[in-house]
Amino acid sequence: MADETLKTLYVDELRDLLDAENQLVKALPKMAESSTSSELRSGFEHHLEQTKTHAARIEQILEALGEAPKGKKCKGMQGIVAEGKEILDEDYEGELMDSAIISAAQRVEHYEIAAYGCVREYAQLLGESEAVSLLSKTLEEEKETDHKLTELAKTINQQAAGTAGIARSVGA
Image (tube, rainbow, N blue to C red; front, side):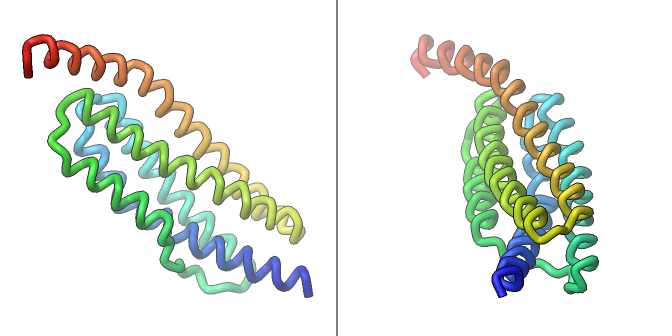
């Protein structure tokens, strides 16, 4: 009975993640388009392709479990994406916009890292070794993306601080 309850939770969380990934497939192009840094834009374009693969992996896992590969509305990601849209609607320009976009993107990554860590553990406990492998790969890719964003932020935030400092010194 305990395994059945954990399996139900596992499937529910996989469906939640599938919807989260599908929401990101729609949001990432907008983030890329709003980025002024070519490196940041390129990173979002690369992560878009990864995100499509992440969704396909979840569908594969659900099908292997005999479950329909359909998502369940992920309200957490919906909120994070809505906050990201608010950032894109701000009047920020240049590096300041890029800094804001990185902040929003890292919220996404941290949410995904937490979610994938949990479902991977559920898969491990349920003896789903193929799923563990697929989820581990996705988890590592999410961590790698977060690390790349952190590295980009070091430079972009510095540039944004310099731009803001210049604007303040001229009375803007």
